[in-house]
Amino acid sequence: MKYGKGSGKNIDPGNVIGLVSNFDVDSSGGDGSLEPNSTYTEWNWILIRDGKPNKWRVDDWGY
Image (cartoon, rainbow, N blue to C red; front, side, top):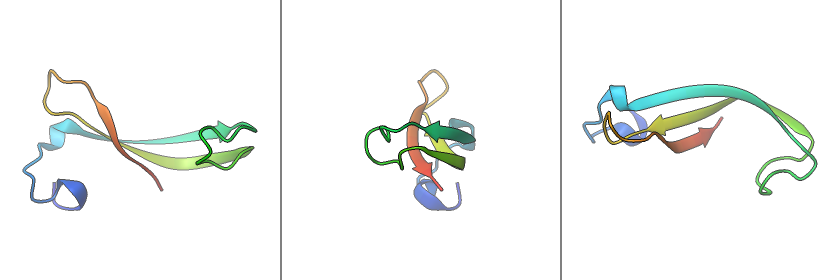
């Protein structure tokens, strides 16, 4: 990984996934960090794992 959190950490690119999603937020706004009654498009999710047998976890998200 050349840039970002992975730089200089010798992270195997096979243990990183980038996803893009679109989703709607209801009137509650979720946990308060999202705009109520809105739609988010092209929202990025970065998932990482420590190795092939390990579970994926969300490392970062947003635009």
